[in-house]
Amino acid sequence: MFELKREESFGTRLTKALIYRDIKPHDLAVKMGVTDGTISQYRKEDGIDPKIDRVAIIANILQVNPVWLLGYSVPMIFEPKLRNPTQEEQDVLAAYLDASDEKKDIICGILGVKRANTDSKSLGVG
Image 1 (tube, helix red, strand yellow):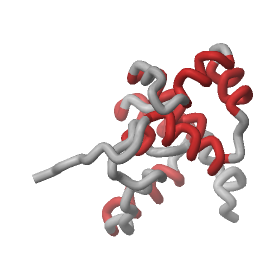
Image 2 (cartoon, helix red, strand yellow; image 1 turned 180 degrees about the horizontal axis):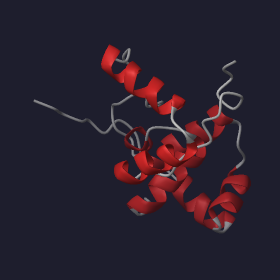
Image 3 (cartoon, one colour; image 1 turned 30 degrees about the vertical axis):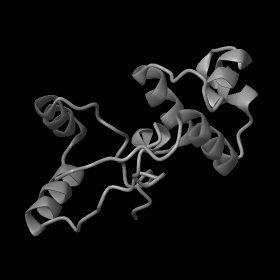
């Protein structure tokens, strides 16, 4: 069974994340477009917890796990487990990289993703 335990307040975790990332509360406020007072309220031990959309914004700015930021017993830094691609995935990627720009656009359209700059220079290949 999956169980989360709340270990600390949002305010405590926010303060720890600011220190860890060496970001001043004022700078966080500016990046979020809120007042210094709002950040001050978030940082208080018995202060207000932000709405979930603001938690996500703060977590993204500070590059920390939003669940950790809420005070729960999970790692501070979210690190998805990476795996080696299968041979089939490697073959598909190689075929994509060898395709013309027109075909890459078609493939991305089918997948519903925005095409990134994938020329060999931007990938550090060649």
